[in-house]
Image 1 (cartoon, rainbow, N blue to C red):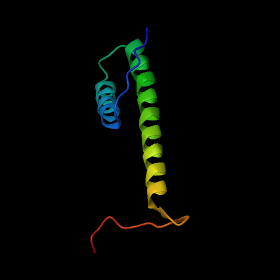
Image 2 (image 1 turned 180 degrees about the horizontal axis):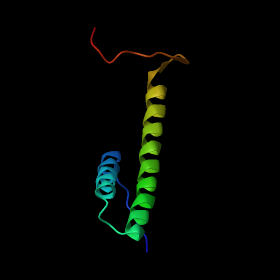
Image 3 (image 1 turned 180 degrees about the vertical axis):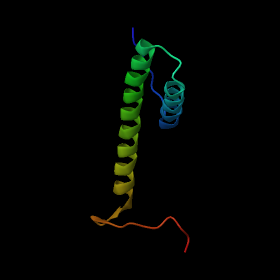
Length: 76
């Protein structure tokens, strides 16, 4: 039974980095490699979705009077 767990972007990214490291070592079976790869694809999709949602929130928050205004993050 697959476990359903809500995780943060940071948790998903950290887990993805661990999977990549494990796969790069090359000392796991083909079956385990495929399972890890599949899980990695799902984690990548989770991260991409979180980034898209964050981008949408930023666009909404930076909209002023119906016009987007992009502001620099620097204090210059």
